[in-house]
Each structure stands twice: as C-alpha cells, then as structure tokens.
Amino acid sequence: MTEGLPSPEQLRAAASGLPRLPRLADDSGGPVLAGVSGGADSVYLLLALAGDPDFAGRLVVAHFDHRVRGAESAADADFVSRLCAACGVRCLRGARETSGAASEGGLRSAREAFFASARADCGARVLVTAHHLDDVVETVLLRLARGAGAGGLASPRVRRGFRDGHVRWRPLVAAGLRKRDLVTALRSAGVPWREDATNALPVTARNRVRSWLESGAAAALGEGHPAGFALSASILGDSHDALLAWAAELGCSPGAASLDLSGLRGRPSALAHAALAEHARRVLDADASPQSLAPLVEAAVRGGEGRFTLCGRLFRLRAGVLIPCDEAPAWGAAVRSLQLGSPDAECGLTAELADVDAPLWETLSSGGVPNASEVYLRPPVEALGWRGRAEGDRYRPLGAPGGSKVSDMLINRKVPEELRDSLPVVLAGEEILWVPGLPPCHDRRLDGPCRGALRLTWPSGGVGWNVR
Image 1 (cartoon, rainbow, N blue to C red):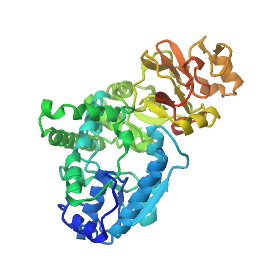
Image 2: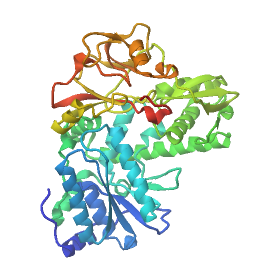
Image 3: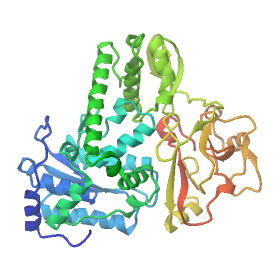
Image 4: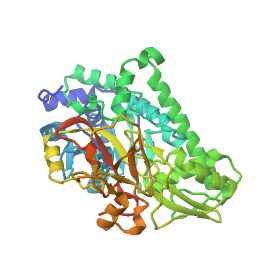
C-alpha cells in the first residue's frame, strides 16, 4: 500500500485514534529515537508515538537506506521523510556507502552504526523499534533450531539495556500486537506504507520461517500462539537474568576484560552457560552456539584450564580466569556443519542465498567484491561445512586453468604464516568452495545475474585479524 499521504490533519486524527502504547518504566523524559523503515510495522509505531502527548516534542525518527533495492530503497527514504514532515517529527536519514546486495550481518552492522550516530545527534538514550509478536515467534523458532539458551530465546525483549547506556524499547511487543493488527489499523485510518518485496522471497531463514508459519501455524497451534511464545520468552528472560545475578554473587561478571570463573566450579552447567553466553554477547557482540560453548562450560564447572575458541576469538582459561589471546585460532581438521542464514558462532562464516542483479553482477565481474571477505557461487546440492586447513588441500581457483594447492596460494598472496591455520576452508561435501583471502572455486562460478546464489561472507576484521 503506497498511495499518496493523507493530509497532516488526517494523520493527526489517525494517530490520536490509536491505542496508547505501554510505558517504558525508566523513561527519563529525554529525546526518543524511533527506527522507521517505511513498512507497516514502523509506520504504525511512528503514528502511535506521534499521537501520544507523552512524546510531544521528544520524538525523533531515524531512517537508514540500506541501498539494496535501488530506486525502491530511495523511494522508501523519501516516503519516510514526507511522512515525518506531515507528522511534524524530525527525521534523521542515513545510507549505506555502497549499493546492491550485501550480507545480513553487513547490513546490520551498517544500520547499527547509523543508529549510534543518530542517538548521539539528538541526545537520545532510548531507541524504539517496531518488533511485534510475530517477530517474537520467528526469533524463538530460529534460535531453538540453533540450540540457544535462555538468554537467546528471550529475544527480542520489550526492554534491553546496552553497555553504552542506551536502551532498546519494543512497545508493540509489550502491547501484544501482531502484524495483522497493525495493518488493519492503518487500512482503517487510510494511512499508506511501503512494501519491501524481498521480504516475500525465500532467500533468508527468517523469510522461510515466516512463510511456513503463515501457511498453517494458527491451525496447528491456535490463534493465540504468538502471545504464548512471547510469555515463554519473557519467562526465559527472567530466568536468564536470575542466573546472571547468581553468577555475579559468585564473582563472575560478564563483560569485563578478564572473566573470573572460579566461583562457578562445581555449580550447575546452566549457570556457566548463561554467564559465558552473556560474556560473548557483551565482549564480542555475537551469539555463541551451545556447541562452541560446551568445552568452556565443562572446564569452568570442573575447574579445568586450556585454550578455547568463542565466535572466532581465542581465549585462555588459567587459574579460573578467562582472558582473550591476541593470536589467531587454529581450527583443526574436524568438519563442522555450516547452516544457511546466520553466522557460524565459532568462526563467523555466514552462508546465505542472495539474488545477484545486473549492477551486482557488474561489480562482481570487475573484481569490486574482495575475495578476502565475500564471494558469490552457484549453490551446491551437497551439505555445506567448514574446517581448518589440511595438508594437501587443493582446488581450482576462479579463472585458473587447473587445480592449485591452498598452501601455495596462501604463500603467493603473502598471507602471514601465523594466520593461515585460522582461515576456514568452506566445503560442499568434500569439495572446497572457498578459503577467505583466495579466489572461490572456478567450477561453482556464476555466469551472470541470477536468483538464489550462494553468498559466503567471513568478517575477518571483526574477529581480531585481517586478511588482505
């Protein structure tokens, strides 16, 4: 729904007719920044806040143009600017430096950097986002499938504080609103919004889960299942907070440069898991998988020592204290599964399906995407996996007449010796698809623009070292 905007008077009437959202308990009364994409969820949020006397003169909107959808992305930004002007709300706009397709992680990082800048610009402590109950259901299911603990299953929380002092507030979740409630209210008021056609494409795990839920979740689980998911997530969040409070009483406070785990010796594994998962989130800004946490959890509970890898970073546990190591980890020969849609919690690799349009194909063809961090390939039928470098590894790199040894290519490209064993080798079955820093496999190359290409990304700069 993208017709012309109603008049300012009509928008004010529509805003004043929406139910007031629940309050934020620790609202300090300062500026409030709302993330608005132009979709139905965020348009509803903007109107609900703009029509609330408590936010008069305090509300500021932040819109980030991801520059993924060309003219459509620019039209989204223009729509949000016009909507804010009609509502009498200041709008801060930002945009990604480059255009075209990008990994979910890369888009998220760019958006978060903009939000941080926007908060500083207007002096806002509170960032409001338009998550609703359907988002809670999708997030819980995705994280259940990855084996998340209580902290991961509690997201997205109604209120979440961050180390830099800002607060994320999700009042639509607190109000118990679903996507259909928001759309119905906007249609009744005659208020338009922007549709992102990529949300309907099965190229991300969340899109596929959303489509699956829409096809029969209500029939299988009942109409009220989103509220049940939200209640469970809230209970799990409280349980996680209780575990962290207990860990703090034992002298273990996640987020410090060094983490004292000595008080966790002999305690339940769930306590060590909660503390270490929270430590990874605060220090590395990443969700560590239960599989990568398991060896460290076991060592903390039994009082062991050694070296451990979390989210691509190497840590040393000695005398009950966990500290980060400067050197890069060596992954070893064991093959780990690589799932589509989210970063691997151990090494940071991400595998996604993405559309390669004509502009992106031109960029790829001209070498505009660095092989050190990102490649696009034809998706294999075989299961994806990864491991460390092994003796004798070889494959045919893009454009080469034949196969080459991985070790020779790393030497020729002057990759430092101390980093070579920290580079993940991406596999389809036993076939090598890519090693970050090297060209992708020639036999899996793309021949032109296509839908559903396999995009592999590795955030080398985000885990303590770089490959150039």
